[in-house]
Image (cartoon, rainbow, N blue to C red; front, side):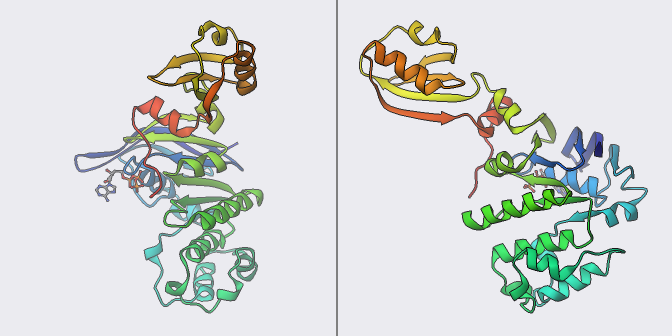
Length: 305
Ligand SMILES: Nc1ncnc2c1ncn2[C@@H]1O[C@H](COP(=O)(O)OP(=O)(O)OP(=O)(O)O)[C@@H](O)[C@H]1O
């Protein structure tokens, strides 16, 4: 069942088109990702869905409500991760929880949430004294304190170190396991690939593809896997192209590049061995969302700084 339906959304800022005919639906219980480079229109899109911005045209339904007409109904059913700058520096963790709880008719148990998020020992710590990871965990706690049916998490792990990022990913999975639908906005390919059940790839205000991560990757020509190696002696490409696992064989100046699926490595290496060809400096690469994004848009996603 769809909990969010967005159809033909348009939004411009002066001459700048930020969102250009965006449509998608989010199903109950899934982690839905919106992945695209900086400036693609991701934040504008979710802020329209949250009722924080007014679209120029298009229709939006959140849990059956129109965020423009029924803003209050939408806001009490969804949780929005706040941006760092929105909390006063001196506000203590427990004070922030109490304040946010007071906004909702049926708030969650704040102490339990802090415990679940590993923040119990930080209850009396002012916001600015928290580490980046702790601030993010507090942002998640505040997004969940209203017992939302849908949580919107925007650039959740930007600025976190790799360990804190992985810990945060686990938290997002726990949120989904509680039955909360999650809308995750990110420009980190790895994050989208690891977490999302389905995702919309957006570029320049448009949805260029919408599918599961595996479905998006399978759209890349050749799909699946890539092997790169130097051949010890020349061989006839047909030796490999005849294999059911192989979709293409290409040659660069010094390397052979074989794409395919299934047990590609075994099929290729045993076939080469039967003809006494040794694959030197062999590397195996998995095609990923970055490849899918490049294939669909001709541009790269900006990778993490
Ligand atoms: N309030 C605003 N006034 C004018 N232009 C804006 C405003 N907000 C966003 N934009 C512009 O609209 C476009 C889309 O911005 P948006 O923030 O939605 O993208 P994004 O994909 O979320 O990128 P980022 O990850 O950098 O936030 C960008 O070109 C941005 O500069």
